[in-house]
Image (cartoon, rainbow, N blue to C red; front, side):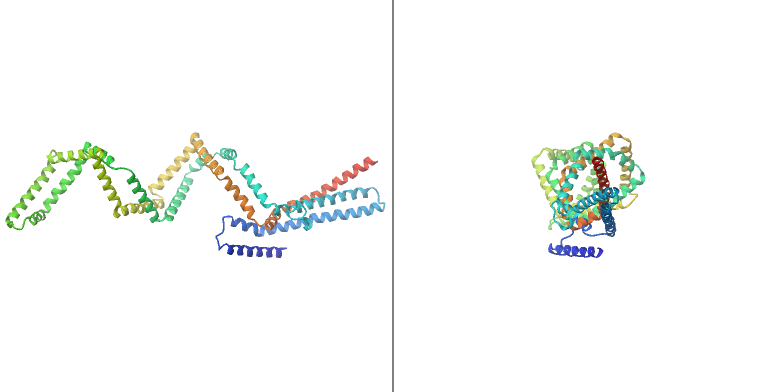
Amino acid sequence: MCGITERVERMERTKAAEKGAGTGGQHARPGGAVNRAMTTFSPADQEKQRGVRQMKLTATGLLVFVALVYVLAKWAQNSGAGPWAGYVAAAAEAGMVGALADWFAVTALFRHPLGIPIPHTAIIPTKKDQLGVSLGEFVGENFLSEDVVRQRLHAVGIGSRLGAWLAVPEHADRVTAELSTALRGALTVLRDSDVQAVVGEAITRRANAQEIGPGIGKMLEKVVADGGHKRVVDLVVNRAHDWLVLHRDEVMDAVEGGAPGWTPKFVDRKVGERVYRELLRFTTEMRDMPGHPARGALDRFLTDFASDLQSDTDTRARIERLKGEVLGRGEVQDLIASAWTAVRSMIVAAAEDERSELRLRVRASLLSLGSRMAAERKVQDKVDKWVEDAAVYVVTTYRKEITSLITDTVASWDAEHTTKKIEANIGRDLQFIRINGTVVGSLAGLLIYTVSRALGA
């Protein structure tokens, strides 16, 4: 029998290889592991099959035994052995009928009895696909209905259980580590060029879609009203004064270089010195005089500019054109794209470091969430409802796909191997039906014969 099984397995593997070659070497489908399990016999299956053969021999031996008893009882009855022979013959005869009837019923599940194509026999190989459809419908109606899903999940109490589990520091550490691993994996899988393109396009689209002039105007108006710009003016004036002190010769050379060629050198020199002194005096006065007229003029300019940014159409249009030109420059796009690299490196480093602020905050948040979920009924109900709604959405939206997975998987099984596989797993128990049929038939036959004899007397 083992040799036959091995030959069948080799033939099936050959057919599968030819089928794979005929389909262009496609990758195995998700159900490939299940198909292989239904077309191969594992050592455990072979052991079960040996147990089935032993039980078949036992049931058949019992049939042969009652048949032998029947023959001997009839011989004894005909030889005048006494009334007991009739009782034994009746019991043995009914036992044979029961054994044969149950043999037919059990055999009809898996194959045609004696190879005769009797209607409604070989049920499993011939009705395999229908059984798969029925099984899928049964699962869909009894396991994937909204009421069943909600009742089962509500009875579990996911919110309180999950909260109690998360409130344990070791569990929070484990979840934090798993989240960090998943985050690092996701960032590793993502290609920088793709993410940079998406980030750059998103920022550019968002910037182009929203006018920035009014927002800048309001911000500038508030800065001027609060005097926040004065620190910038102080910084610029101080830097300008210091620069003039350190670069006197450069300023004078620049002024002399711009003078006409026909002017005398000493005149150019005098002019350069005068210009330098005036610039130095101007920056010194602006630095030392908070009420300098230039500062007031700058305040008025910034105030007017802030107002124009909010209300003047031409100013706002010029700002928008300037924004478009700036965003369109390659340097700006490269800067936007490079921001992703910096962010990714920062996140990966934080995810890898067990003492990083990111992981510590995630751990603290998980512990806090777990404590609240374990103690607060309102939070538990909210989590339970989320889980129930999500599960109901999945089973109601994808019920057909889930049940079709069962139907398609059963349909893809080889009928012969499926039959052998099922018989190997449940055939031993089915042989007890034959044994029970023999015993019960014998008892029923004995009872019927006894009643008949009593009524006849």
